[in-house]
Length: 117
Image (cartoon, rainbow, N blue to C red):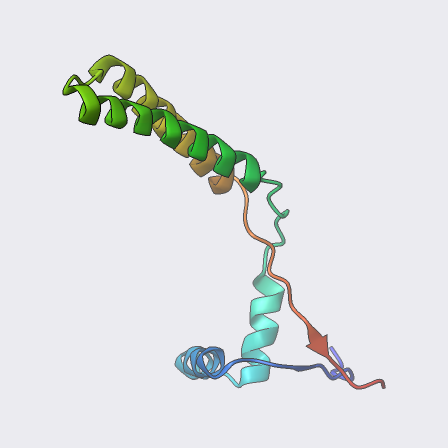
């Protein structure tokens, strides 16, 4: 394949060190290594996770649990049954989020700067 298009891109120092190390370990030039990465890349959809809804749910559950702790501090009685139910809901919510994220990947957004040809 003819190589007649040029792309310039910006990397931070850490990313450049990583790229150089990986390309050297593969005994490839930077360009060849990047081409190999592109050729073997699998494009996956961006997750449509409603992070705000999860944050609200965790906040609400945390407040419920804090009510049990407040009651314990004021009365010396701890509602173990109620607290266990809230902890279970927290766990289930975290598990739902984990499963939602496991089935998806985060989209890598790349800004490329290139010269017109």
